[in-house]
Structure formats: C-alpha cells, structure tokens
Image 1 (cartoon, one colour):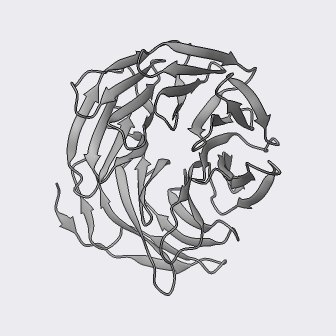
Image 2 (cartoon, helix red, strand yellow):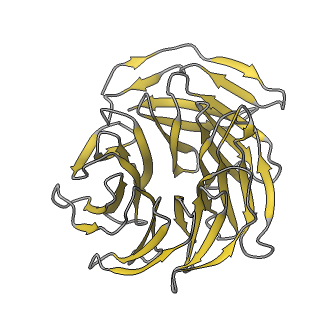
Image 3 (cartoon, helix red, strand yellow):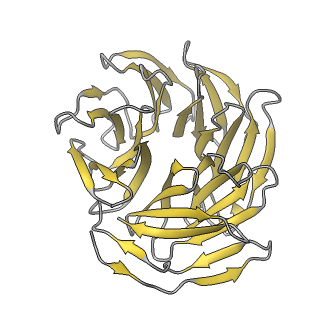
Length: 341
C-alpha cells in the first residue's frame, strides 16, 4: 500500500448541467500496482474482492478496499483479454490472446483447475450461466462455444459469418446469452440449442460491450467511434419490442464498457460507461441525462468497468491500473476517485 496523497480537485460545469470532475481527486490512495502493464478487464468477485486480468498475462484477486493482492494466477501465454466469475462462487474464468480459457479456484492451487481450448483466434467473450454449470465463450474466429464447467467438455460450437465477438453476458435466470460484435450488431443466443434467437437492429459502429439489467428487461450496449461520432451507449428492450429504447451520448472516443448500476437509496435507475476519452460517466437510465463525470487524466484508454455495490465502481485502465470510484449524493451526484491500485 502506498502513501495517501492529497491533490486538488477541479470542477467544471458541462453544457447539459452535469458536473465534471477533472484531475486526480483529493485524498486518492495510491497503492502498489496490481499489474505490471495495462489492465484489460476487471470484475467484482464477492464481498470486497475483485478479479482482474492484464497484459502481464496474469489474473489477480484483490481486496478493492485496501488494494491488497490476495492471489495471483499465472498460466496464459499471452495477455489476458477478459475475466469473469460465477455469482457468489470461488471460481474465476479468464480468456486470453493465446486462444484459451482457464478456470481458477479462489482457494485452490496456483494453477488452473480447468482448461477450455478450442477457439482458433483470441477469445474476447466470457459468460457464466446463472446456475454456474455452463460457460459460453466467444472469439474473433466468428464462433461462440458452450462448455460444461465441471468436465471442460465442449457442448456446442456455432459459427456466424463476420461475427467477430467483442463481449458476452448471460441474461439472469434465463437460457439466453447476449453478444456484441464487430459486425455492429447485438445478438441474443439461445444457449440450449446454441443458435441466434434474435438480432437487434444494426448500429453505425462496432458494438464493444454489453450488459443485462438484473430484472432481465433491458440490454445495454456500447459503440466504438471517434471525435464524438458514434461513442454512444444504447438501451434495448429485451422482453417486449426488442427495439432501441434510447441512447446515451457524451463520450468523444470509443465507449469501451457499459454497466447497469444497482438502485441506491436515493438514485433513479442509472447506468455507467467508460471510454477511451479517459472518462467514466453515470447516466439517468430513463432520461439519458448525464448525472456525473469523472475524468481520469493520464489513465489512458479506459478498458473495463465493474460494479461493486450501489455506490462503488472499479475501472480498469491502460496506463494507471485499477481506479476505485464512489458515487456521492449531494446537491448534485458526484463521482469521486478514492484509490488507485
């Protein structure tokens, strides 16, 4: 753990009335870096724990409150592209540019407890079924695979032309998996037959990430872009019309991650996004108004977001590790940086 450093906070008011915080926050705790290079993915594990993967080829488990590294797993031959975990489980999954997926046990040995080989190119999507018995993976090889977690056996493999997978997430309590792709679409897969059950209307830019609301009613996706063209997040109706509901516009470079936020005691339904423009934004889900912005200057492209609880976010970055952010309610909602590790 590093020293507590006090730094100046600069505020500016955006044209839409939201408050933007720029520069390092006051009292940001600087811990020892978890990874030796860019952090490519982060996910909440349980309680105060998170799991992350990086270009240093390692998977790390940390206490996000203290920044302490509790476990480190090394086994991939190339950088880790995605990490995820089964809900309330001790099992961690990682994907890599080495074309493989591995499973690790939080309290097990330092080596992987299961391998899932079979993709021909970098693996870019991971999703665990709600009952934690199956795993879906996606790759730039245009395929989606389904696996038995216990045996490591491949239960199915489906290929769709030009379907370069960018992200996967499982619909809570359902047999459906949502997928984003470089073909600019969002797809819904039926995991039972491993087939595309629905394709949402195509966007103008590559869809980089997706998330599903806890009640299973909505899908969120994010877009690539540049100079404000594209760069939006999009809300989709999953249960009824299966059409676009609204867009969230305000980033100026590719939006890399999008997440639904648990409803806090004083918060309207909200979402969060991160971008290559080094900003994390919180939005009102229903009105698309930007409620708060944190600018992580010097952090470089922001790669991934993870939700710890109703007020706490983690952001993985290329240049400065993992940032711990907290939402505070006052006259206006603020997104404050608490720590870096």
